Length: 280
Image (cartoon, rainbow, N blue to C red; front, side, top):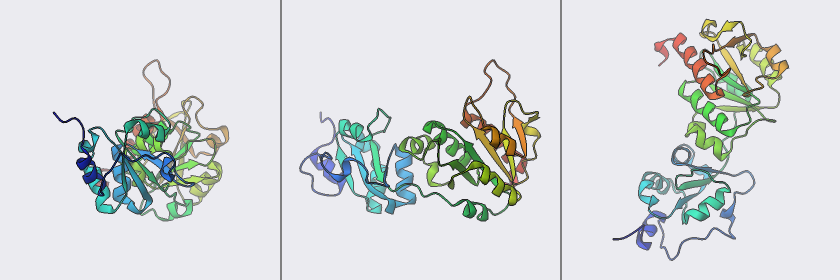
């Protein structure tokens, strides 16, 4: 019984004659160039190829039987003209430099382009619904919030430049491809961002356990930006003070707070509920 792909199979996958397993050591593909990122996982890679194929410089596929499972992504890459390399699983793991669930696939890409805050605000058609993250440093939490925001139909996610997670491969994997769809703005100062939102008649709603108002009691049909702070410490003091209003999610168990992505989901889908099914 044949185990794994033959050389002929690999040649079909790569779209070129196959003589030996490509070795990425000592080549420019061993690590991204300045300004390039490594993303991994079937959904993030597929969505990057589908939505911005020119930004995908190279696709890595792990050998050993996974090619069949990934044939849709491989076919999409070939259709879009993305170069493909078949590499041993061990080399793919070394390339990513961490023990992550890469699902047998990774890609070297240009980073997702941030949207300027002014363009983000000007591009809203109707009532704005933004998510602002204040000091969320865990990339998995950032990715999960981005995924939640996209699923809830938010107009954009705003993140700070410093003391916060950036858009890494882990973020893309946790976002399950949502970084390819939702607009993301990176700002130098959250408090100045709050001022600009207020100038554009957008209510700034902070989340805090000590708030007097429950999140359901806020009128989310108004243009709103919800701020979510880091787990444990919450929002920074000045950010909290600059909010128009603070809301809280009631806790009924012994734990005092939710994961930030769960809190984002609770609030964003309440906002969507209040805005009515007419927006679906």
